[in-house]
Image 1 (cartoon, rainbow, N blue to C red):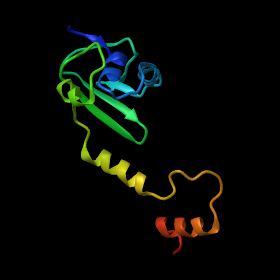
Image 2: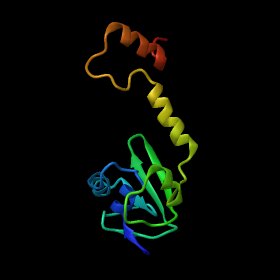
Image 3: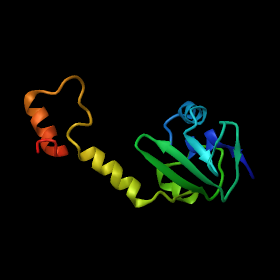
Image 4: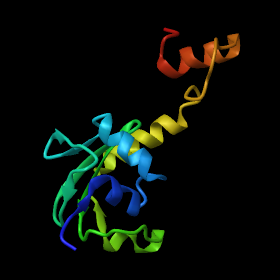
Length: 123
């Protein structure tokens, strides 16, 4: 097995829950190889680096070995190496700690005061 479709690989190593989500990410231009957006049908080989824009962070992975079928979570490190910088994960953690991430609609007075204090707008 020398090459496999990128959408199938991303699904196989559990970066996406379904293969159609991996295909949609490719269509939207969130999956890149060498800085170029790729189609879902693009074949990848061992040794290639892939950048995937996932929400607030951009994951960088290296293909160690290609595979056709989905594997268990414990076996994933045998097929891919996570090269994502630590700063990306810190950025994600900072967003999670923010009390205003999940807010829908207008904030209450108390939430607004908390926001002012959090962002330093109360000065």
